[in-house]
Amino acid sequence: MKRLLILFAVSNFLTLVCVAQPLTIDDCMRYAVENSVSVGQKQLAHDDSKTNYSEAVASLFPAVNGSVGGAMNFGRGIDPATNAYTSVTTFNNAYGISGSMPLFDGLQGINTVRAMKVARERGAVETEIARDEVAMQTLSAYMDVVYYTEAVKIAREQLEASRRTLELVRRQFDLGTKSAADVAEIESQEANYDYLLTTEENNLALAYIKLREVMNYPQGEQLVIETNINLEALPSASSEQALLDYALANNPRIAASRFATEQSRLNLAKAKGAYSPSLYLYGGYNTSYFIDFDNKAAYDPFGTQFRNNRGGYVQLSLSIPIFNGLSARSSKRGAANAYRSAQLEQVAIERAVESEVSQTWQQMQGFGKQYVQGQKKVSAAQLAYDGAERKFENGLISALDLQTAANTLLQAKSDKLRARLQYIVKSRMVDYYNGQPLIR
Image (tube, rainbow, N blue to C red; front, side):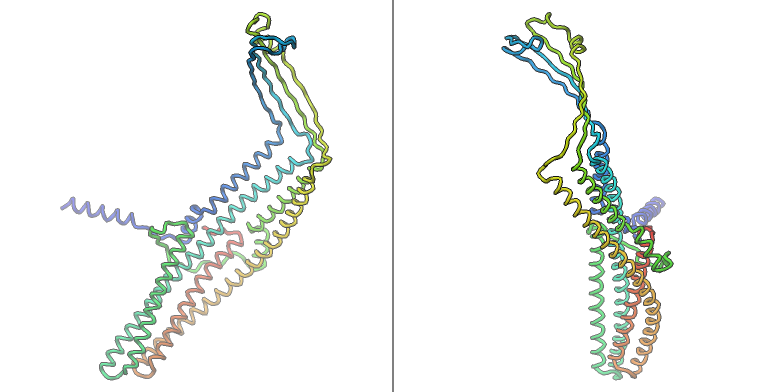
């Protein structure tokens, strides 16, 4: 018996441990960001930009190459010692090391490094933007689930109230105090609320599917979220103008557009450098070894030849562009157009962010007021419905009047719910535009 009790206790403990804890908004957003395909792609692109920057920096340093070669000749050939033709078997090999370094190339290398550095910084910001976009999509999908969860509860409450009313009306019909028309009207109302409940349950199922999709969460696995969300504290922004000023100076989308403009400007400077002469420094060191297999004694040993055959060179090369098939001109024009396009895109993004921030601020203010009014509206609608229900029981109003009061209450509850959730979303967005992270 004692063993059974222990097994039962252990089983209960394991069951409690295995129960999935509801995920909060931040849990869902964090999971979505960590498992997002788009974020992963941006991270890989950022890694490429870091590699490109390292490559550009390395291109400013001398390029050094080593070489080793060997050849064996059979029959008629040239003796490297006498430059005379011989008919012997010989072997020779050569060793060399060479290097080159750009001394001046119209600042093309420097501007390439600068452009790649900006591209690296832009990649980091674009990765941040991808994370924020996934978090925003998850926040919206999460709130849809919360809304339809509450909507199902409201619809179920209205259906239960309608069924209680229907049961009462049927008893009154049996007693002769209500007509068949009253029963039919309440039955129709009960059927409508039953249909509404089915619709909201279907919407809730679809909302869960959408949330799993945004989170990249397996559709076949259970997803439990925390639906009891309280109103959050007021956003940290003191005014709309302060919010706009901060967003225009620090918003990641604007920062990315500025990086893109700067990168385009540096690419234009690089293209202009193609018109400039280029000065390169070259240098090398080499040696060789030769032997005639038919007369080995006539040639010095390997070490001696390796030392005696040493040689080197230093070379300066100046390249002056005269005509290159208009490639430099075409590259410059393309870079200039890209720079101008980036400037226009930056202005468009700044205006779009400015409009987006202003709309979010106003929407937050509006939804906050709607929620306050919604509370009063629900209280008034509840009192009106309770009064209408008592009047209907006493035969003072028709079933149609009761249904109207019930529909008014249902709509008031739905409006209050939507205003509350939208206020929470807009408050989070205002904090985000003011520099607060979306995931807390």
